[in-house]
Image: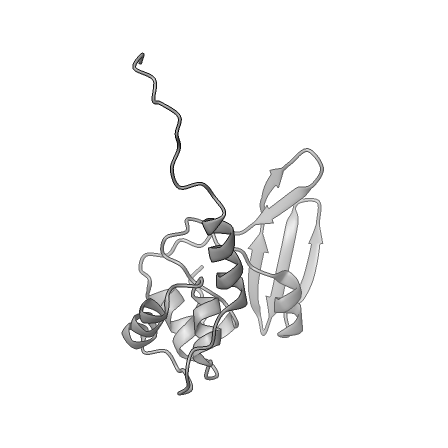
Length: 148
């Protein structure tokens, strides 16, 4: 079944570097999707369109229900983030995975995203990540083994 996903999934983030993406069912329900399901899977329904999460991954303590999209190009995901309400540059930075300032601006420009003009503020998450990275020892006094 071919779906026009740009019309049916809102508030999504896309990263071509990640093999799998997550979908928040509670956010989808807030957007008007109705959830039904049984032991065989979960179905999300909106305006006659169905998303069937019928791939079940069992862990030690729970189940994860998955959905497979066969995407041939990145156009599918790009259209879902280009036809939306305007983001601030800070929202774009967060939704695009916290890239640097220049990279965020390049992605916004390259994808022709709808972003309100404004200065990029300091990101708290990036500040915390940088502080943690600085506390990690970048070198070692340990001598490398000569034995393979």
